[in-house]
Figure 1 (cartoon, rainbow, N blue to C red):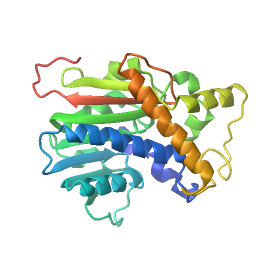
Figure 2: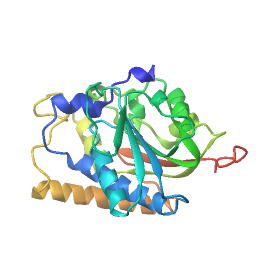
Figure 3: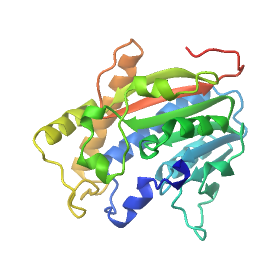
Figure 4: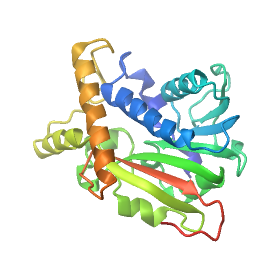
Length: 267
């Protein structure tokens, strides 16, 4: 069952360096920009309710809370992760839960699933349950690792069941209640690097020096440079997708909306 899934953000705590990887920083920044665009067109900004499912250590959610406060938008954020402890104290303005059943149906304006679905064995049932938490007209923002041909020792280490392409997500999306707004692959540069790593067997499972580590802090020139390159990569891929051009990438972003009227069909 998916409720037993341990999402990797927290599982990596014991082996992860103190420094954030530029991939994580870039993904957070880019998704904040996506959210900002959606939120600006949202009809009611007096009390936005947001769920981050598989939230891990809440790095993204604290940035999101800060951004909303900057624009004087009142929000309620609930973070769900199976690894939260009973005595864990949440940050101000953030609620914690360990199971999506703790979220009321038809209550959320936005739900985030950021690199979560690949950890879930029955992803179709899981996605259906998540969509039930959205209000009609609410948005679901999903990122997943892309392309099964890039499945590697890295994915096994992170306990992934699979990687995705857009057809796989379309096949499990509840079409009677959800419509696809947009989608695009991103981090094309990283997908090329990953292909080379797989082709020449360069990936490591070493917990001290391998895939979970980043040696440099946020102010380091290399961190800034990689983050900048990834941000540009994301923007290019998102812009090209508007013209029907979808370059391959290491990850896949999909934006979905719950139908305001259940008789609506997916576009």
